[in-house]
Length: 348
Image 1 (cartoon, rainbow, N blue to C red):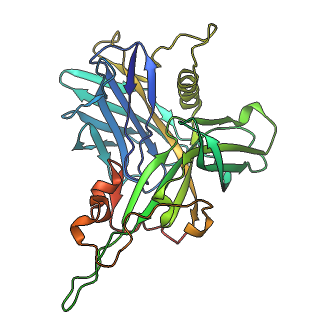
Image 2: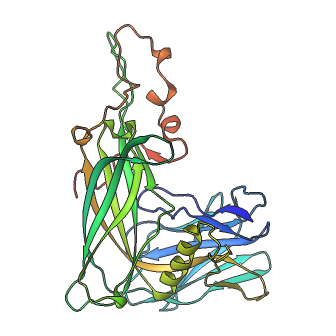
Image 3: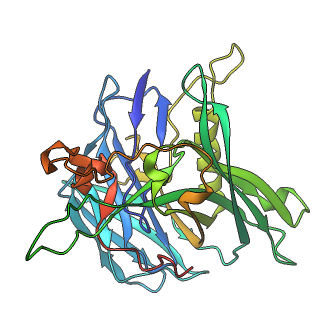
């Protein structure tokens, strides 16, 4: 049984969900995952191949990726490297249908046609701090994000999935100087998915309730909270096919290995090789309506002591400060980052 890390998170506003698969896969199997939504975000699709012995999938570059629309348009994606493909300047339309076409060498891969849902629900975002057992033997501070969702009168159907994304401000160290001094550096804005292996699903067809409340994400409290910390709740209104795909993924991710559990196995999506129908292709192409709900945390809201490694100390030379105090890339540790505040910063 191999461990497969399918997809890495992208930048906030265009995150491709990071998900851990547990299953019997073979080295070199093709993995395609992408989404088209109705926002102004850049639309993204990832192509990779599985590796044996638990290594991360290897990005597949050089493919031709085309979005096929209901009105007959063929829109080409741009390969940006490491298996990521982007389509800028396009957003989906609720009620319209889309599919994806991928050409790799002589092989033609196509998804089933997916129709974008028309409904959305209204989310209310909440958070709390507490102490819980996470990965260690001792209790530690945790930050928990929850959401209450209200469905409009008459909207007693539909399928939904939620993810939480974080963006926090990291103020870089700027030492005082005398005379003509450069301006202080812009802060870092560092983004990532929260609790990426948690899958939050709701089938509104299975209940008559107009409201649901659920815990969305949980993470340990660290010095990411010494500046403004934003949580972006991302609601996806998805198709039945996508709901069933994520439901199966959830069953595998939450399989704890009891005697009566279903053995882990790969989850097959909606993409096939037209030249070789017997090839097993992992991943999924989905379409979704998306709605963001955002809320920020002030440092004063945090009830725990936070270390501040980058505070200026009189007489401390610049070279004695940690690299994360001056370099966003070092602080981000592989997460998405920028020195420009997101357009919604303090506007939502």
